[in-house]
Length: 155
Image (cartoon, rainbow, N blue to C red; front, top):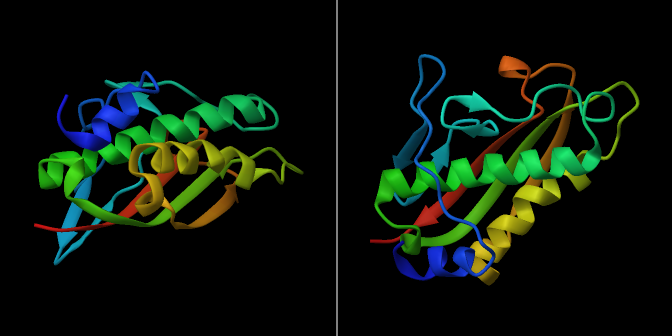
């Protein structure tokens, strides 16, 4: 463990995983200037997708919440891999979340709270961010949730 951000997460019994490999022909994270943006992160542990299916049919809202949290952890792992330490983050700018939703399911914001709450636990006030929560009829690999994080970093 290193740094203040990871210490805050440890207080919640959370550790940053190893950044997952890309599942296609793209880079999982990119830095441009003082901005870092992740590609869409799925609820993966190693090479295993942990939450599959449509929230509101195959999975409960609570399971979707946990999937979003796992996606956010993977996004933070990507940011750490890119810049070396999460303590270099000066602001979480945006969280984008996509929820594979059953017909009629409209609680995507509540599902994405899993990601947002984790980010604020990790970073405090600099973790407060803009967000989009979108319902989708399908996501890659039948994932329940996909999350992208935009962060500003310093040197």
